[in-house]
Every structure is written in structure tokens, then in C-alpha cells.
Image (cartoon, rainbow, N blue to C red; front, side, top):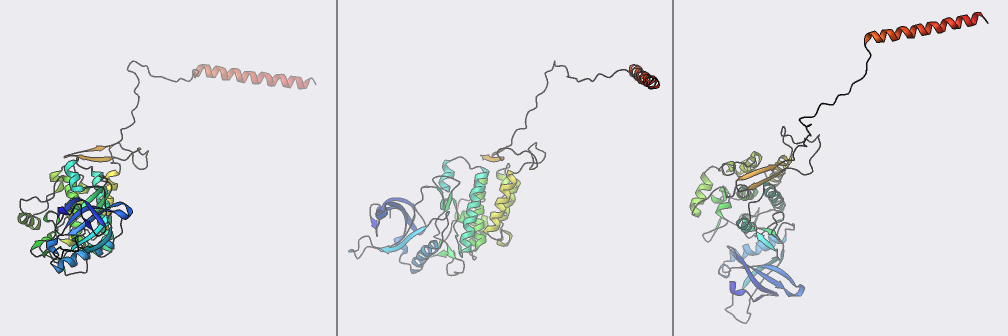
Length: 375
């Protein structure tokens, strides 16, 4: 469908092909009336014969339209049209229009940049957990959280945008199953064990998928790696989680504990909801930014450094930058110690002075009495 570049869908002029998903092609287009770029998702023509998939596509448009969050891609429009209305053989294109985000996906970023610092990964996790909490409160789950569905606005890891709710469904909608026409819905590497088994997915499934993304960011690879989708599914369903510190020994234990809970096999053993995951990430962030007792770093009751410690991961090496202790000036090796003395007279001299003082007082007293007698 890349031949659609240069054509028009309704009032939108397609200028570039951006990507391809399981249900649709994504294009960059221009909205001439207001001279802005938009992203257009066009459903694959071979899928439009399925009424169920058309309903799913339109449901996605309605679902995204209900979400208004700065870290979720926003839908602008949805419609269906023919590129050439006079050609009866021309297929009908179903499409939705979204705001265009300048940047790259997290997946692409990881392939072309050094590993993210621990504090950056925690920041990404906090924002995405907040996004999921919001979406879940609106009655929706995403079902396909993965690095390629996370955009970094302007290429910044501090501004992640969750995209592609193409697999999202209303939490109370039981009509959507794991497969459609024999095709698996979701990406096995990031799917939860219950999704692999074909069981109903809920908010804990999104927590697992986000945990898998964070695991990859912290350790450099997903928890399970396999050559085929089937072997991947078998590993995910049956093998225990490889401890994160077995891949990155310098990873803080607080991070490992958080990942282990988020990636528990049983949904009931994970965080209860995205808000709970957000709280856990925030607690880890605060612990890693706190002074370390006995390290020489000032405590909260002492003078604080101008910047908090930063944990940075470079490959498998991690360093903790702590403020250096204030140096003390040692005296020169040949310097003599400085002493301060107080002059104190010896005991004999003190008694002699006391005697003279008493004699003087007595003399004055005698002279005073004699003077009074002569008056």
C-alpha cells in the first residue's frame, strides 16, 4: 500500500510512508486547510472484507478518541473513502487520523544510542505507568505495549508517548479473542503468560508487558529470547524469570525486586494496578536518590549536596556519583605546633604578694585610727 504516497484520502494528502502494523499502514500526510502534518493509519484492504475487523478498527478510533492524555497519541478524525470514486473496483479505505509526533520509537532509539541511564528508565516507567493508570480508569487496556509502540517526542527519553491502541479493547468487551482468522494478536516477546495461554487479559496483562519493556531497558535484552514464536511462547509460559541481576549484576536490588513483582507469572502476584506500579517505581527512584548510610555522604539532617546521586548504566557497568567529602588541610611536616600559654606565678611568689597586700591594708588601718584620735 506504499503506492498511496502522493494520493489523497479525503482532504488529507499523503506525503510519506511511516510504517506497517498487523492491521494497518501508517502514513505521514498534510492537512492543507490548516497546514499541519498528521499521521494516518489506513486499514489493510484485504482485511476490510471482514466485518469483525472493520468493527475492531472503528472501535479503536472510538477508543482513542475517548483518551486525552499528553502521553497518548491523540485521534483527530476517522472516516472511509475511495481514492477514485468513479472506479467501481476501487476498494474502500478505512482510516483514522492522529496528531503527528516528531521523533523516533523507543525500539529505534535503543538500536542507535547508548544504553539509557537507570534514572532515565525509571522516568520512562513512571510516565507510562501513569498513562496506563489513566487508560485503565477509562475502561481500556492496551494489549500490545512494546518499544516500537512507544514514541520519544523529539527523540527525548524524557517524553515517551504511547501509541497504537490497535489491539486495545474495552475491559468489559469479551467479544475480542486472542486470535483473528488464525493470526495472533500481540507480540509474543512482550505478551503476558495468560495472553499466551489464550486467557482473558486485564490490567495485569498491561503491567506485565510494561515490566518486560523496563526489564529490557535495565538489562539490555528482554527476559526471554527464542528463535521462533512457538519456542518464545513456551519459554514465557513455563520458564522462571531470569533474575535481572544475572544479566546486569550492578543493577540495584530495589530495581530487581520491582521487576520481579511486575513480571510474576500469576496475575494476582503482580501489582494490583498501574497506580501501584507507579508508586513502586517512585519509591525505587527515591531510594536510589537518597544518601547511603556510612558512605560519608551527608544525611538529611546534615548539609545536602547540590545534586543528588545519579546511577548510570553503561553497558553492564554502573557507577554511583556521590559528592566528594570536603578536604581538610594538614599542617606541613616541618611545622611546629602552635601553643598558647598563660603566665601563672609560682606558689611562693603568690604567698609573698598576699603578705605584702595584708601588711599594706594593716598600715592603712593604723594610720586611719591615729588620725581620728588627734581630731
